[in-house]
Image 1 (spheres, rainbow, N blue to C red):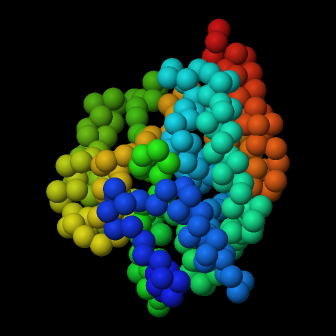
Image 2 (image 1 turned 120 degrees about the vertical axis):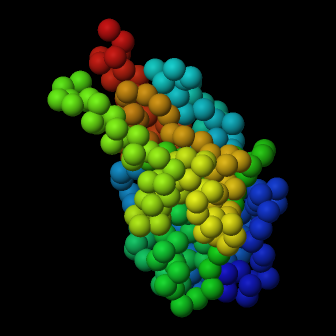
Image 3 (image 1 turned 90 degrees about the horizontal axis):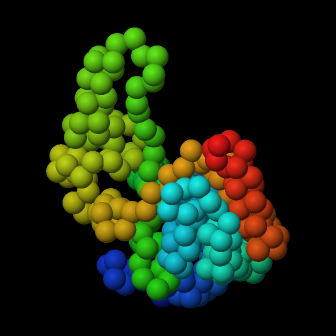
Length: 268
């Protein structure tokens, strides 16, 4: 917040005032100077972060990642709306507004002014010796919220004691356990609405914005048995896009890889 204050920029404090894409681009351009990047998009170059970070931009632009039944990528992840989104994100890298190879602590070290991050970063920032805050993910036509989703737990077909396993799952998914996971675990927001009634940390401050974002506009990642292929190819393609690869070609590669695997494995 210190860098924003110095530049005369006020971060939105209401969901209806969330920065538009153009406004956020202008903010990053204004804040990029003296060796400081205006933004930070990358926490990791592979794994799940890239889809967590960039899905909200696709959703905000009206792009659908997969078909409703999760069986097809062609015409969805490489749609015109998705291509427009990739071009928008690529602009930040092309113009040097973000670092495509940042350190994990770039924000904490004061080397970037804004950062896309998950709720799990808050405990780290609470130990920081500078002023910081949380605002809403940039919107396009309307506010589109954030990516949601995490781990799931279930009973395997060869479980030896289904009743005991189900009893444990009921406990693990109870409001009390979900609240405890947030407080005593990695600070992820609870997955149950009722758990928030047990946590006053979501009544104000940065966590209030996170709660509001999830309650108003949380978007789960695509539900499909072919998800491992999708998220891997998504991460590779969007990182390539930030490095300057052709956007349409990169998104076509996601669609082709996904659909080919679907036909070979799931369409029988």
